[in-house]
Figure (cartoon, rainbow, N blue to C red):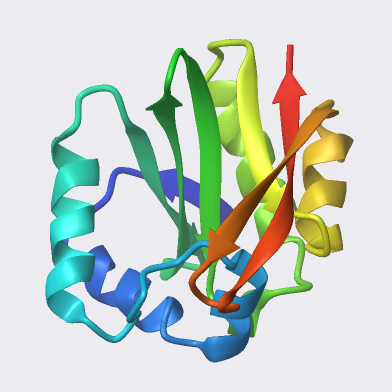
Amino acid sequence: MIKLRAVEPADVDEFFSHQLDPSANHMAAFTAKNPADRGVFNHHWQNVLNDPKVTVRTITTDDAVVGSILAYQNEETPEISYWIDKARWGQGITTAAVGLFLEEFTERPLRARAVADNVSSIRILERYGFEHIGEVQGFANARGAVVKELVLELK
């Protein structure tokens, strides 16, 4: 059973191991310059967890930590972001976690971003009513290149 819960300190260790996968980094694209730098990772998560404007949850299935999902303020509009352990891709976990999170986090509009070739993530967002509202270009550390990112919004 897929559940969301408050982040516990040990969860951050799992999050760190999830984001070390090179192919997961490639798909996410916008990652740290060096995902293996634990100090940078810890600093980032300390900021996330200490920011009262961020709603963050651990995603579990059968009590195992499989990812994280959050909404943060990006300029004036909240934005959703998530990361799932690559070993769990294709199991419906992300789809279920996004649905659960949207039930809890009801502020609208809510935006999301996905690299244009991340078809699975885009499909999940569209399933919940996110609509394409724009595109931006940005340098993606994980790809070492400028990529097109789609901006989607749930009203």
